[in-house]
Length: 261
Image (cartoon, rainbow, N blue to C red; front, side, top):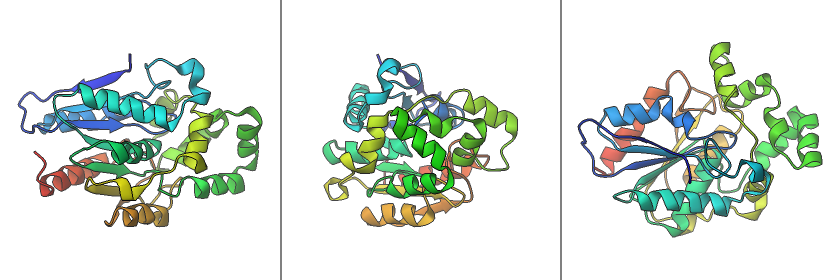
């Protein structure tokens, strides 16, 4: 059974649930640090799943070969268990999973935080090869994504702002784990999003300090969904950065503007 963290409001104010999808190397825990309790405090029913092989969900022993299609099935399973169709919110790889989910399934809206762009992770891979050629060599040699987060310093460079205290980085780093090599190839070229199939309104958010996806890549994601990206002065893990509340508040304002209650 998939791990799902549920935070229910003491006084419900909204009928539409929120379903949060984490990115590569993470799990549902990353949303429960701040976002889930905060949205519940504001009256939303907030849920986050750990995709197969992540967090406390089964399948860790097969993590290398999980597919994006399998991750989409996980989101669909949890979404269908909720009392109403949820807004789906995805970060990084989870953003790509949300895009693929919305090609087939209806949702009131989608929200993408520092998400894999529709053209995939080719730019990210080239930057990794330029900045850390040994890491990319190990990834391809071992068919494992573990070398990308092989040290705490690498994880800080990828996910967190320089201003984040080292003890916080260490705590989050201790919860990261290997990611699917097959899913990486899906994001590189095997299973890229098809934005024209998506009918839900989309909110696209990015960080100006993000080293994984550039400002231009986030803008290209927004353009693919006929909207404009909104940026915050933060690194890749927007839900864990010091100014996370600004992101959450913007999301809630946007949902209200869409008439989602």
